[in-house]
Picture 1: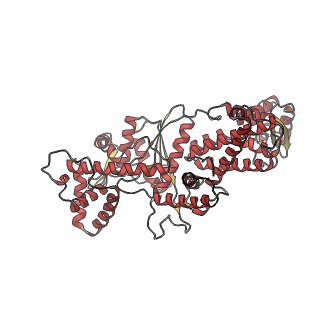
Picture 2: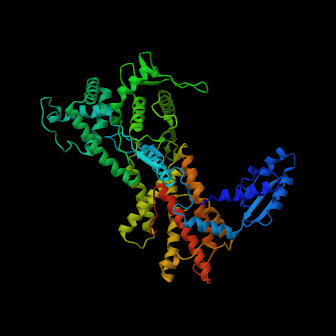
Picture 3: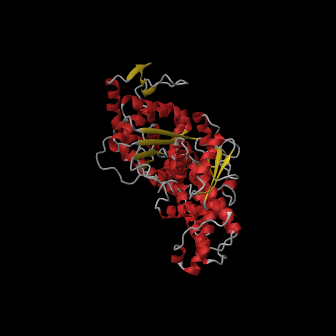
Length: 590
């Protein structure tokens, strides 16, 4: 279906053209003064210079040409030359009924099946997820869902860290603790055990202990380094331990991501990129892209337009070791070979911006990606506590993600328990859903690049700009529709259509609903889920104002009542679609 702005602009363009002016001046936008009008056209201001005519005179010509408009109820010139517009109630209702009939609620197929890979998550194996992993997971998951909704073929990649020194540290520490294990017997030729010699709890204790020991014990640090090298060279026993670490860690990561309603299509790892590194480096040498600098192999990526220093991208260090930049470039090689994506988007900490600028420039300069492949970086800010510092536990440590989720779920449960008439199981299930909305909406409602304060009390409030408030609005709509269905039957509630608004609050709600598709599309093209949050808060406020001012179920005219219910059904559908795109859902009752 045609976008509302396009329909409205089309009317103004015809009017401008009929008056002898260029049609391009007829573009319409949502009014920035909703107290005066609903839409506005400022084209006469721009046309004044081209036609050497006062803008109010041009605007008067256009207004006169639109006196018989079937779309606008008011078309008014306001000096010095603005055109203020109000839509006919019947037109708005007709547009919403078209929107309701559209499976995508008016969203265009922007992607047309083009392949997108979103790199988000990025945890290291053998370590628990902590609050520092929260933003990447939540933002990336939302963009994946929004991208799919507007027609892209999107795959989410967790991109696990599994190939660095932490592997050698774990192996060296395990060898000290359990030297009798067959993995450390160089003469062993049999099959290695299928069961890991450690649990996730033990593994999460081994790594920090080994890391601490390596800082104080040079001999142990050297052993860990040697173990890393032997693992990467393919020593069978060490590869078997590494596989155990992966299996145990991934099972735990999936469980924790499940709490957040976050899923990945690809569970690729840093190690998957390693086979591509030798040929990639050789190509860079052969084609003259890479050169030696102070013993390291680098690619120059500085450009004349740079306003600040962009250092060369280091591919191999002077000691022969590769870096994250090497692995990230090899991962692009792998992605190009396996998926040939049209767009690769990285959702990572904004402090990595320079790193990815170097990687992207190197990838383009060396031809690792095709010229038309889009490479995107969405850098997110820090999640802070009320003290303005990175969110910590009460004793100052880094908070595990599952602890944060549990604390917020408990806080929500206490609120629900105070005034509930449902069973214990339903109360806890509802608490989990509301807690997830609090966490996700609390994060996503902020512009991704900004730092923000994670305020548990505010985020779990059922009032104000919060996830629980959005859910409460949806549940209220569900309740009204359910009561209506009890009197007319479920089929009857779907038989009506949205009717011309009978009040200002009803029309305000209808107008906001017409902006759904534009908002969703913009949220993806601008990688800005916060736009979707702002939109559903606006929808919720508009609905609640309409609800408080309107006797919906007490309306005596059945046709009018059916129209109200149809409007509610569309409002519910828009809100539920939006929260699904943001990665959470609403309960039946609260």
